[in-house]
Length: 342
Image 1 (tube, helix red, strand yellow):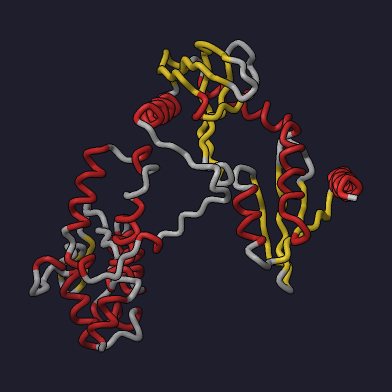
Image 2: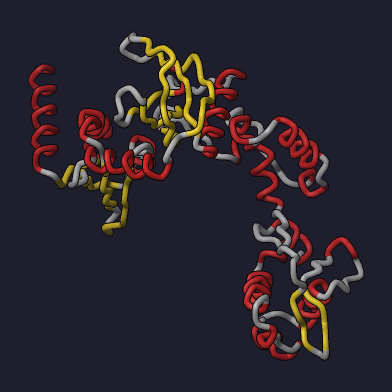
């Protein structure tokens, strides 16, 4: 029974408190050899472990374990004290649950945006051949990937993936982009030169958006990646740090000083729905008690109508507590809907 429990428990033995203690200890010793402790001193630190478990643990750390596959190669013994082996990174050993999670995350097409095809292929091959996974009761729905609306489904095409990676490269290397944007209004902005700021993801709409600064307008703009028909990397951004300061100052000016504060009755997944609806906003949440949750939503002036629509969508499980102008508009919208219904 103990062996069975050890095999299926969530945290592997290399990630328990002993391993965490040793990691911190080794990092502390890197610049101060005087911190080295004896076996007896370490035993007192790792209280709660049996003699057999402790000895096995020490053998692994000292690279003396009978099974060479589990040797950590982290410490060596000198004059009765254990010293850290320098220039050796702490190995990470994934748990069975973590490997199963990774296996199914890689089945999702969104993983193509973040992982190169060759690496993904090698990861899947290694995971499929892993002995631990053969005995793990894996099911695709073990990974909770929700969508707020079945109408919103991001299509990951080769073109979309290529555009996404070009944008990431441009952001990392401080390069400008040449973009053609087919806006929702029907206008086509051809070959715009923009400075990319960051990519944002909305769980509500299952979509990515590029926050950027078109050089012709010199103001913050957000473009949905679904609407981009051309994305090409251009030249370097001159005075990139200055651009960042100016751009972020523009965002601060456009941001409303007072957040919208809502009180959520945590019933019928109301909190989950709030988290998805406001996933593209900066939020701060805390538990008020009595099954009530408070969420502060920070937004830009041009997002006010979107905030109001989302709050109305949540119904009577959410109450706006401030500011007054938003409360007034919410009440007015509800009254108007009621009168139209009558």
